[in-house]
Length: 175
Figure (cartoon, one colour):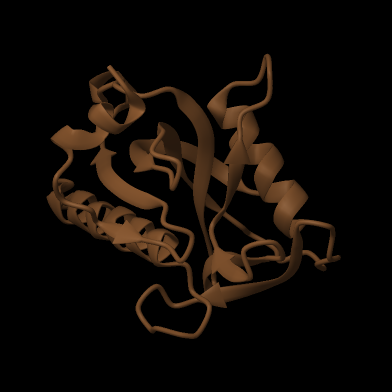
């Protein structure tokens, strides 16, 4: 089966970026319940703090996106998530938790998956630019602005919607 044939079962594209990469599915829930029909190559993190959702400005794509990137040899997706947040933003996350997985069709037609994580920044550390990211910003998760990566915006919407649903479904204590 060719890479092009692999993605044909995903008729609905949730978001497409300016490079032709497509977000095909977002599956939220425990890792054991997430299908594995494409190679796991990355980790993406929805980092929140008192000012909103952390975004980094990617120098090469010239867009604002979530922290995250490729999983290195011998590294778990959780380790990659922690490393990428630090390398791209200079921030330390606490309560890092896997909340799901996303599948993408890259512009070359290849399918890839990334584990999705949430994490919290308790104290904002100074940012120093690097060869990959030149700025960070905090986003309210709703407003649109120039340069916001559409795939990352959709991932934030889906993860936040799911997290709100979970908090509404939790039993309330009567004491």
